Image (cartoon, rainbow, N blue to C red; front, side, top):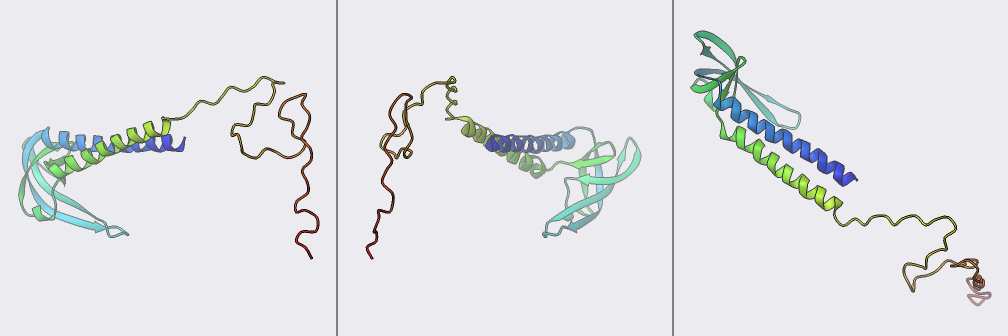
Amino acid sequence: MRAVLSAVILLFVGLGLLGWGGWNLVASTTGEKTTAVVEQCTTTYGRKGRSHTTCTGSWEENGVSQRGQIDGVGDDDEGKSVVVRVHDGEAYSFSWAGILVPAFVGLFMLAGSLVWAVAATRGRKPHPPAPHPGAPYPPHPYPGSPHPGAGYAPWPNQPQRPTPPPYPPPNHPPR
């Protein structure tokens, strides 16, 4: 059950990453095309040394000057003019990495979740039906394996087994 739950979680994360890559593709190829000037890029560092760069700039949309965040550019684009597509006051520059990395990681996670779910559910035997009340006990499933001790009658109306000798035998080890 845990494996199936983990596979479902992996499936949703993979779908999210695939959707993110799809959104980056749509945002950077549709909308009003214009040229933006990357004015400033700010890099912030997390606790584990990871960095995130946010770039802002200005562009014209329908003859009106706009200013805001530009996605798909980095530190090396600061001070340069880049071609962007504008959606809801935010500019998106085309970036293969911003499209392909989340999309391929998402596809990989989707495939992994499907393989994991199939492996988790394949090969399971159904539980045997419960015996009706008063049914005799079935024989031991593994012949040659030890049976319970004295007092155990494998079938109703059969004599019980004799009590085995005590262990260790008396006077063992010899003194």
